[in-house]
Length: 282
Length: 278
Image (cartoon, rainbow over all chains, first blue to last red; front, side):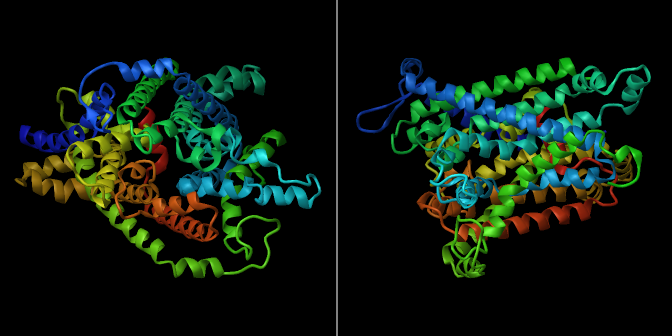
C-alpha cells in the first residue's frame, strides 16, 4: 500500500540523523579509546592499545568499576525488594484504588532527578532533618556523620529514584497474568504461598528481569548522586570518566572506560532480552 | 477499605509494607516542600518560623529566570527535532522494510536505557571534532537526539492500534502521500504525538546527565541548580524544587485529562518502559 517513495521519505531522514548523532559518536568514542594525549596536551591520532592496558594494570580503575557495580547491584536488589511487593499489592489487593495508587507510584518519576537527590541531602546531612530529629528525641547527642557522603547515601538515593522504574515492568507483568490461572490453582487445592511461587512468580520473571536491568544499568552509569552525596568513598566509575574528560584531560583514557561501560550495558541488555524471551508466557 | 471482598487485602503485612514503600517514595518530596517554607532554611527539626521568603528570593533571582528561559528554549526545540525525526522513524518501523531495520530500532531506543554520560560524551567528541562550539544549540541537539526514542516509542504504539483503511481510502480517492499524512495519519495519531511532546518537554526540562557535557556559557535550569548545589546548600533550591514539582503535577494532570475517554489503558511511562526493555 505504501509506495517506494513514501517508504524512502519516512526512512532516510531519521536513519541519517541517527547515523550522524548516535552511530558516528559511538564510533568516535571507540576510535578515541585507541588514541593518546601528547605532552603538549593534544590528542595524538596514533592507534594503540595503551589505554586498555592501563585500565587492566592500574587497580584504581577496575576497583572503582567493581565498587560501582556493587553499588548498582545493591540498588537493583533494594529496588526489587521495594518494587515487587508494591506491584503485587497493587495488582492483586488494591481493589478499586488500583488506578489511583498506580498513578501515585508514577508521580515521583516525574519529579526532577536532581531535586530528589538534593532532598536526600537535606534529610541525611549532619545538620539535616534526620539528625535534628534524632537529637530532639534524644536518641543521639552528636550528628550521625556516616549518613551523608557515603556509599550508603548513594545507594539510598538511587534506590529511591529507580524503585518506580523497577515497579513498572513488574506491575505490567503481574497485570498480564490471566486471573483464571490463579483461580484454577486455588480450585485445585493450592494455598496462597504455593500459588504465588508456582504460578505468579514464574510468570512475573520477565518483568523482574526488565526492572532489574533498568535499575542496574542506570545506577551503574550515574555520576551526579555520587558527586552530590557520595563523598570520597562513594566515587563511581562515571566520576572517573568525568574527571578524565575534565581536569585530568585524558579524553582517550576516559573514552576507553566509557566504551567498556557501553559494551557492558549493551551485553546486559542483550542477556536480559534473551532471558526474558526464555521466561515469557507465550 | 470498602465493602467488596476482593479489595480487602488478605495480609495486613502486605498492606503495611506497601504503605511503607509509599512513605519512602514520598518522604523526600514532602520534606522538600515543607522546608521550602522553613524560616531557618535547610535542616533542623521540626521546621519553624514559616516564611515565603525563599520564594521571594527565588522570584527576584535573575540567573534562575534566565536559566528557566534557556531550558524552555531547549525543550521546545527538542520537541521539534524529536518529533520531526521520531514520527517518520515510527512510520518507517511500522511500514517499511530495509536492511539494518532491527539495528536501527535498537539504536533509536538505546538512549532511553543508556546512562546519559555515554550519550553526552560521545556527542561531545562529535562536536569537538566538527569544531561546533558548545552552547544551547549543542544541548538542544543532544536532547533532540536522545528523545527521538520517546517520540518513536509513543507514535509506534499508536500506529499499532491504528486502522490503516482510512489512509488507504484517502490514497484511493486521489490524495497524495503528503496530504494523507497531514489530513489522515497525523490527526489519528494526535494523542500519542501530544503525549510524546509532553513527555519530551518534561524530560528535557529535567535533563542533566547529557547537558552536563554539552554546556556552553548559558546554563539550563538543572545545570544552574546543579552549580548552586555544588557550592553548598542553598535554601532557595527547595523553593524552586517545589515549584518544579507543582509544574510536573500539572503536566501529569493535563495528560490524564487528555487521556480520559480514550481506550488506551497503558500509561505513558509504562509504554515507554515496556518498549525500552523489549
